[in-house]
Image 1: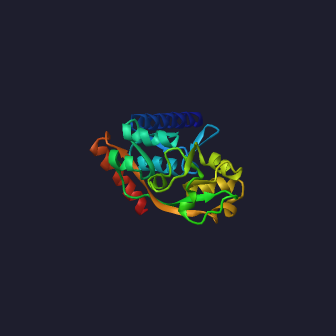
Image 2: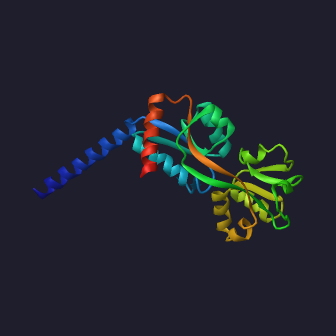
Image 3: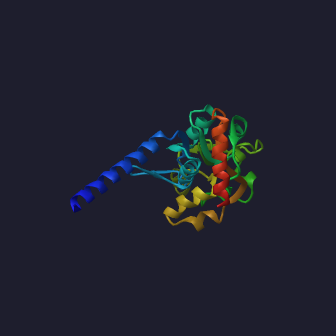
Length: 232
């Protein structure tokens, strides 16, 4: 009798797990392009996580969709949404996104900084003229928009690489968002040493940006989930 009860329990659990797995598979998938910028999107030893990555998954869970969330370089995430390859991304605003994508309510606001190397005495923004400034690919749009500034720009792939260029004096300064810059500097315990000399270029707002190819019904459903999460 005891064996029969255990067998029934096992069968119940198998049916339960299968039905939930089938339900998850049956849920419609929404593709997300998360920026490969720590701490927003991180791939580490086969695991994906990060502030934007996790929030993107949470949005879709609440909206009742299955997330197909890939962490990709910043520029690819940016272009994927504009081209309709990905359904949405989370990032700060750019002129191209404002024109070619649909934004949600603001998610977060943070400062964009120019952080000088030790040899560079940065006092005002015009001091970067003629200097070599490191920027993440497709980043620092506010700085690039200032046509009166004439620095020489060098692109880097991620902020760890940018910080390495800064510390080794291979650039005169780097431009970047305060959160990932601090994250990379904290890894080597040099936040105060560099951030205290930084110049604030602008304040940037991050949004969920939807592809214009995403059907209106899905967009509204996901936006509703975003608004509910923000209230929480």
